[in-house]
Image (cartoon, rainbow, N blue to C red; front, side):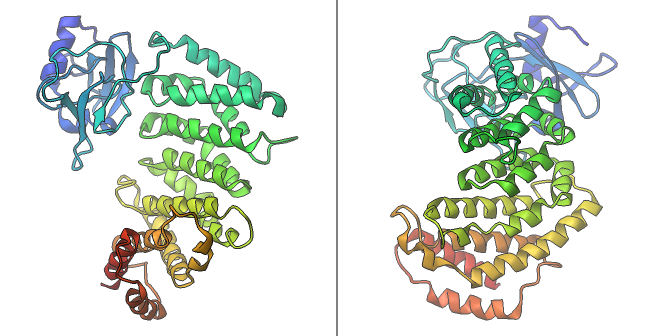
Length: 424
């Protein structure tokens, strides 16, 4: 590993130099600087060292040092509070600068996680003391406690303690170095989360509140982190969560299983293929929460789960979701897209808006149909050769456009716009 002095590190960070395998400086380009192009190799107290796809190694300060100009935020860097942060939608790069009119000196404390995508980051009012890095002793205590509790038979008397531990982990794992520490011993930790999330765990599953938060923590730890996604993929977390998603009886918890799966799959071609091969897309298709709204008192959660499924499907079939997917996998995805086109079209024509008569006042009457129409349009645009809508759908579409009233309801206008896009 190339060892650099603090002064040299600053020069490297400011000038964007890369130390190549031959020890010669190269240029850190935007593609390398993007999170997807780098793998963090080593993290020290004040330094992060990464390797790009060409094997070139470079190091930079762990603390992002802002100026009046936007600079790229590199993987693993901590962002001081009160910065103006933005994302380049063309490249996916995250950049930050000093807020206009702010003091030029940025405090080296009260750090917020590098994974925060808010436009303006403000100081966290949490008064708990900062925990040393790179090894977070408090985090390790939470991990050890979680593993110990999960490795015994489900005890509902311990559920409160387990929920508290999961809650502490959920707050910490949004920061990359904490997520990496959590999954460092993946052979132990990932099976722990799988057991906690499993609604069929023997002899007795953990309560739905524990299952729900377990999936939230695991999803939060791996999202937008290709290396950690690869770890959970290799450890069999995706088939296990597909099982939990299929067997779960609590609607809110099912939604959190879907969140975790989405976090594991996004941007990881192998995970997407495994999800499809293990029947994930079929199980999603067979799940029709709106049918539950007709026969139980949990209609609002059913609608929320229905919307989560539709948005997950839209992401799964978005070519930008997994741009590196192989041709064979692309064929598999295209075949499933055709099936989902038929499914979405049928559900739109078979609209269950009658079940929305007792919806809460905050629930928009056209929100569900609008989401379905947008997802169907997305599939039609991306998979025009396989997404063939039936003739009767065209007739229904014209009638539905005429039926939607012209009101001040934003959701009705969005729905009408989505329908018009489908008509062309």
